[in-house]
Image (tube, rainbow, N blue to C red; front, side):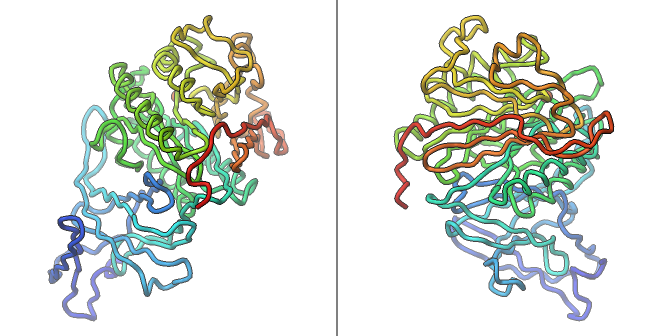
Length: 465
Ligand SMILES: [Fe+2]
């Protein structure tokens, strides 16, 4: 392992640094490796996501030693098993370490890679690192306008091991062989700052799925800082989360500490990831950004459906009106209604629940909303939980918001995913409780908790491509 990077047989090793300058110019710099150069280990903490246009780009992020300035992505056709015809992309590391009230992360470099210029509807293989210290081989399939596809929503693994998350996501892949990616609705760890090993555990577990499918993640409250143990979250802070999770840089702010609002297109669906873990002033900024991107999408007929992912949604369950739900509802509810968003998937409540298609108006007070089926309304759904934590949603208040389906804790154990099949005519949604052992130590079968369809509301300019 220690001598894999620098070949002692070659006498002097050469590290080729490909640096993109001025957009297109490629400069090759030969740097003789000094004898004392430390050996390079393969990349670690690898996570993936889509770029803005999933038909031509994707993102991959990883960590490696602080002494390594540049690493590579090699990408090639799926059948080029030995990467003989690979394209190489140099990625410069960004120094990162933390030691203080928001957590402790040892020094390392973060490599944020973007692979663009891909062909649509095409399978690729890729790896990250350097000669002698490559990562395992990852795979990526670009989207294309005409194909039907599925995606899966999962929520709130919120544990130190992520074992149940893996169990649920494996079941989701087995359930639908056409599952192209996951939406992860936040709370990927329990306490991101006090126990840094939790996010290491998450990235390790997510890596199993990132190997073939991106995991499109949003930040939950447990993914903000909690250093005192007294439910003190630092909304708007995302330094640790952003150092482990990658996402397109198209949100309402442009730096890496932005609020993680981002969007991407996959075939005929416009996916918008809202961060509802921001400060109240930031919500207003994010809302304007949301209106702007929806207006752009509608004006150009770029999609048939809009799916929104967030952690805390407009309607709570266990916490009712006690926390962030009212500001989320008042800030974004009317925008969802005005632009006829199809489904808003949320996490946080560790339950499965689903509303009628409804509209939220200027008065977003809980009593002002008509919860009966409304034409071109938006469906709000809490996407269950992967476990181990579950709450009941069968009280009277939850039934008001979510008249179609609410669930008990036991009904969801040992975990839930929501599968969505997309066609040009409709979305077919199925919420599934996976098979396994519940807290009563009973073996339970896989069952469908809920299913529904959403018909396409608008035309799509790319339908003929
Ligand atoms: Fe939460």
